[in-house]
Length: 367
Image (cartoon, rainbow, N blue to C red; front, top):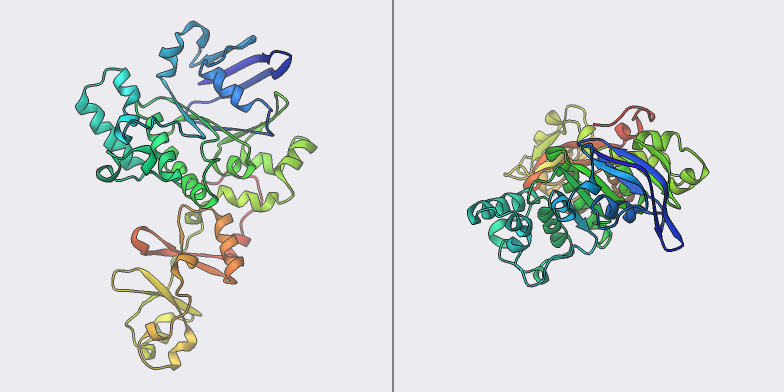
């Protein structure tokens, strides 16, 4: 889908890209990662014809982009940047509809597309359609930026450190959300970051850059298992085994979980546990409200009076979260399992420390 063929770009005496070649397949999520000044953003600006190369050529779907009008090319490519770049005087709906209006879509079609995309990025249209950028949080604004980039259904999405300006908690949420979107939409994405963890978590392939050159272009699994040289090894860091857990979602290791109703008499608990050490406690709506140990069976009253681990925000995890997050939570809480919850806190299953520890060594690609 995208081919940079021996591309060189200079800014005066500074060599930003040096005989740089890269291929990105259709539907692939390619992450460009490397230290500041290595040429990552220059690559994106060249693909979008905000810059032209001094040497070499760039082809999209086999066509040399130098033969295309820049404005025609850009309307076929979604572009998301770190500062979001929403127009402050426009509503969310007007921001998302910018490119469709340039393409002369009818108003009804634009409105339907805006609502569709707001649903897609988990923002309720009735609440956000008429809001202004100043009324949005950083994470909400970034979601609107992604929706705007997707408005005309481009085949290619360019993303320049889109999550770099948000806090770590919001960034984790956006990672999960965007991974879900990409799984559904299968756009061809070129994503720039200087966070190696972000590259490993999101990318189908990762291109490690240094001083305008491509050092290694591989799947995250291969990058972690076999760094090309000392620079790549040092850039990844010494915790390669832990970083590999970023590639797996909790849902891949989720197993059925034993659960009991909060209203159950503790005297009835033991037969339901079937030898397990305890169970997750659910309210009438199926939401996790705590944990009860098998030892509580000797007590009196309902299970709700004997349960522990009631700080739900600290103990539950979503199926889309990474195993790296799950392991970190377990270590921090001193527990060996976490309940996996879906919408409205309903129990889906659990993830256990023993299953994370039992993952096979690097080699196969996680689903």
